[in-house]
Length: 182
Image (cartoon, rainbow, N blue to C red; front, side, top):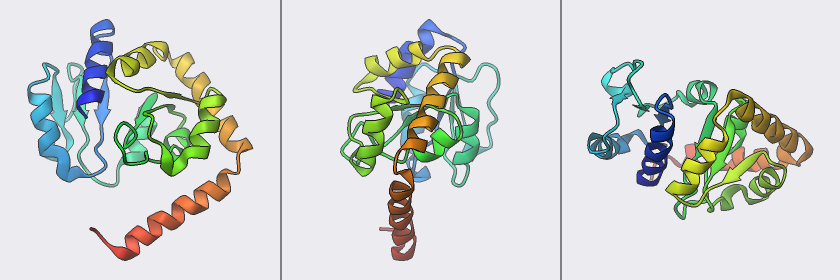
């Protein structure tokens, strides 16, 4: 979160109208993220507190469950989390289907073949740190650049054996639901 916030802060200085929807995978992390936001110097609002964003809100902390399709649909660019730390990265399928340009960190072991194809085909960009994130956000500054990358991602996914990857992903999700938390 701190790397994403630092990268966003740098990009936001160059483009003050830039907005960030920060959607933690686990909403229980909301308080810790809110503490970081409180000292970030950025204006922010929190979804779980019922605070709506306004034109001055730079960061919207979307610390709720079940709304990722909404956030992906609203985002022209998605940084796919769990990829800057050794967690294997989260799925690129949903943000790509929502036509959001994809950015990710170096640890994408959970979807290695798909991310390799996306990167090679220009459908995703790997960033390693805050500076890389800020630079990638600058390269995707226009709606046209975002749409072009999203189109490339969809084309790559259509060419890949994404059904096999998607089946494996679905199986992992279902096993997690059956096993329950923890």
